[in-house]
Image 1: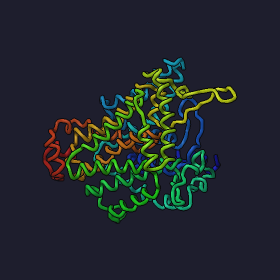
Image 2: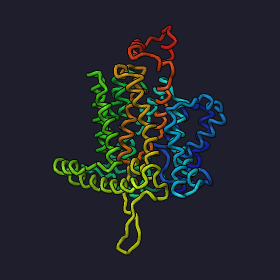
Image 3: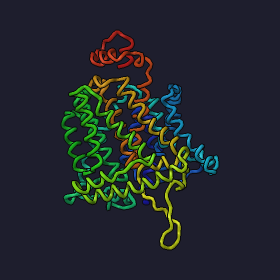
Image 4: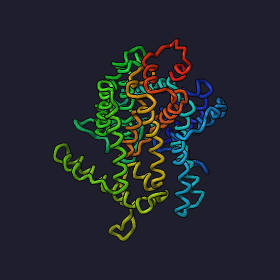
Length: 472
């Protein structure tokens, strides 16, 4: 790692605290999370005693925690526990039970739980406290779109010239494999910029495109920087397509299907269909029932033999790790690579033979069904309750509600991506906490389905009804 990388990541801590003093805390939170994801160097940090090591994300969390304690120390009083938060609390604490059940000791369990609490729990509860409001969620959506717009020229440069910006600025490649995994068709490249991998960059750019598209169609966002949102949507869409990430093409098809059903059929059928697919896939893999041979064969015959071989390789390793996870299904194997599959090599030495990127399989092997169910309940329960119970499909394209709906729908894509990769997207976890906060608003819960539709449709600024003012 380079001196400039260490310098930037070290100075990020005081810079974030300075921003907490100069700007509203809410804005600093989201800007710093976007900065950690999109600007800071990858794979660099410092080892710290007792607490998780300092890197781009954890350093941001530490700085935000200090900034909140200094400049907004009463913020935590706004939080009120609700059952919807229980899955996240269980997910953060289940490492203790896993470590104890595997004889790893209480210290290991606490250390792992602290890491999980900072990585996943901190942005979730920050979202619960600071962003459980339609206005604040719209501001975060606009900032995400703006970040995507600023990323467009960097992505276009790397699409043509190759992903070297991280190496040019920080002196080393963001990913251990260099740029070998980013070569695409027609002599173009999949950009990484400063995110650490092309998959992370493409998922973020798709997020920015989808939020802009949904805000445009719902007339929730008119202009950004004096230019029509339709223009920015087109620019983000073209950039996202040029990144040539096949997985995000599938995600785009899913969300466009959801949009068409919602706008023209007034139905959430597509959303429920893909939700059922995610749940069934997780169940079938965990239970050892999944067989992807027909899918691999079809892809090899109609699309790409190389892509079919890659998918078959991935699924073979996932099956092996799922089989090991089923030996200790409830609490898992714990950390230190104990969840992976080992075998003897040609020299008679035991080596790790599992090559898996799926966060789903990794969580199943490390924390068992307890960790698996609690994590996906944290993501999916707020999304389902928000989109199916609190705000039915008739309200999805009303300007006040649309930005929050777009984030709630994208949580399904986030879950789907964890079945294939290990995405780290703190803004999405923050959105998850914010959506959970909107779901549990007591006034909205007492309103009937028709009442919600009528209030959302009227959008009256001078509404005399107290429930109207609170829900809007």
